[in-house]
Amino acid sequence: MKNSDKILRILKELYQTEAHEMLNQLEVITSRYEKIRGNGWVSEKDCMLITYADTISGEEASPINELHEFLNKYVNRNISAVHLLPFYPFSSDDGFSVIDYRQVNKDIGSWDDIVNLSNDYELMFDAVINHISSKSEWFEKYKNGDDFYKSFFIECDNLQDYSQVVRPRALPLLTEFETKKGKVSIWTTFSADQVDLNFKEPKVILEIMDILLMYVSKGARYIRLDAIGFLWKELGTSCIHLDSTHKIVKLMRLVIEEINENVILITETNTPHKENISYFGNGYDEAHMVYQFPLAPLVLYAFLKEDSSILLKWLKGIENVSDKTTFFNFLASHDGIGLRPVEDILDQTQVDMMVGKVLERGGKVSYRHTGDGGERPYELNINYMDALCKEDIDDDLRIDKFMASQAILLSVIGVPGIYIHSLLGSGNDIEGMLESGISRRINREKLSKNALFEELDNPLELRAKILNRYLNLLRIRKKHAAFSPTAKQNVFFTDKRLFVIRRENAETNEAVDVFINLSKEHVEIKGRGYNLILQEDMTGFYSMAPYEVVWRIN
Image (tube, rainbow, N blue to C red):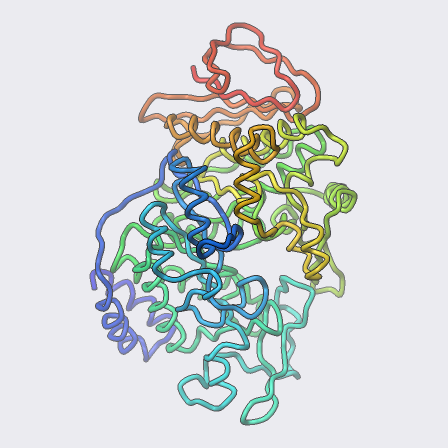
């Protein structure tokens, strides 16, 4: 293996005397997979759709194929990649309690369906490897005393002090299970059904490496490392973002590069910015991208207050660590709007304002334990358009305001990730949330293909209007290297009602000025250039309508 020296160094640090044997086993594992060389990177042409594989369903084909048909018919190459949220057999948490990492949920489709989709669109797979389902074969064999699996999970002593452990949810850390040797308390970070894997056990990391390489062989260009910050456990610490966790990410990158240098690792760490960007490592040895979690709550706050100041102040400090790293930007996703990433940016009064607006507009709020016996708002569960807009706002203004928020997503440094319900103009799925009792279901609506296509074929429907507006912005964005993830980003503080940045690509000598009106008032700007959206020259003063977006090329 070309990276064997680096791999062995990390294995020695993590596994000491077992390192050499582990390296030998990794050589065997990588030899099973076809090697693909290259060093591709992302550009202004890259944009990812985030979706469950079964968001769109019909009677004619598997949900994956129905999604494929939707993409080819309505989106085409305006989206370059698709993040397929966990499509494996699962027992809870809408896919994030995986029963079998190597199988496709039969209700969704097959590996052939996924490989066919990868022929038209780059794909991102989820590696939900911090934990596995309590209904999985791995855990069942552990409970039954199978010697191979005896150290796959973390047995805990209830008399030990676990108070320093960071908790992402207001749920017990330990869960008691009946096993062949009696009752045992097991580490369960996220829920009683999501049993944490023990990465101190060499067999675990070897098994996971083989699974990741299998994903690459099935068409994964991107691999999302779900909840990666919680991976390594050391009692007496916070058990989040430990040095050993970073070493595991570096190890994954090195091993994956043995078979495909084009794969992009994305770390999902819903934490404050400084902790989040630590997963870039030195810029070349850890994650290629990190989720840009502060963006969603800060954009929401800016629109609710009609004030860009805090958003721009934060954005002023955002820059790429290297020419091979960037940010994965998103506003909406299958999860809610995380608040932990802005705990060092917004004060409690500002957070409480957002919480109040979300509750007024039909949303829910989830909380986390703080470690001192208290709780803090952790996540806003609401559709992003409904979070932005009152129910009584008319459709045209609602679309303008929503698309203004999405234009920020498409303008800032990084690669944009668009949630399917944003692309399709969905609202709160109150019925789905109430039926399931799961707050996050408010933004996970399942759509009938026939009904959806009928709406998209009618230009007067809200869904069609939003999709067409979105596609127009994407078409423009793809043509201009100023929106490349490697292009420079400058922030300007003018009228607080305006979001103003400049994206500038030194290689092509192209610059685009971005003006976005966050308010319901007309705001005047000045300057010369060409308005890429209206396709007309701008000279002198220009009055921006409420929530108007201007991309001006000089």
